[in-house]
Image (cartoon, rainbow, N blue to C red; front, side, top):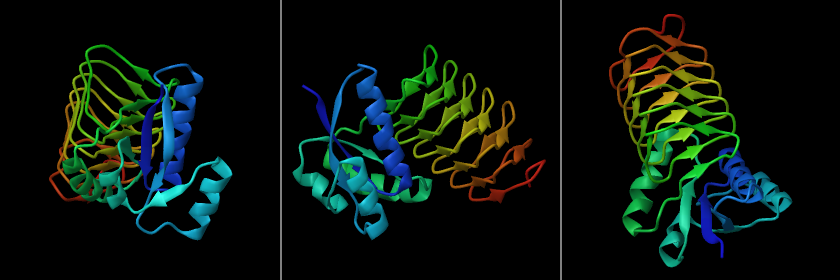
Length: 211
């Protein structure tokens, strides 16, 4: 029997994760049954999108306490995801690890609960991903890198080998973090930026080189 799962957040990022679950099921991997979506304030537009997907909004996030199910947080902003995780993790429900069949995950990697790896992403070897890390479409993470909880790596970004990425960091679309660099907790790396030196916590950097 498929394991039940609910997706928290019915915006675009959450609905993309619904597609990952569908792809996993179609590939014949460990099957999931999406019970529906949880969201504290879904817009009418997002509810219409759920209807087109053939699924439904179940109620607010607090409803998870009453459900016997896995969950995944479908929220793209890492700071918001971290706040939601702080509310939901203590409930003791298991956070699902989801890896799209078109992603590549190499050997000796550690994936925390709630990790989501999108289509085309590449995780090489000896990489550690914390809880609720999301690696988006066609992004790459190189050898021996460590990504702390709730990191968001946006599409086509590249985290090189031996990098250290702190909690709640956002790596923007097409951005690059060069070999051995660190990005401190809560920082944001802008789209197309290139990180050539360490970034301290709480900063927003952009450009080439990123500053």
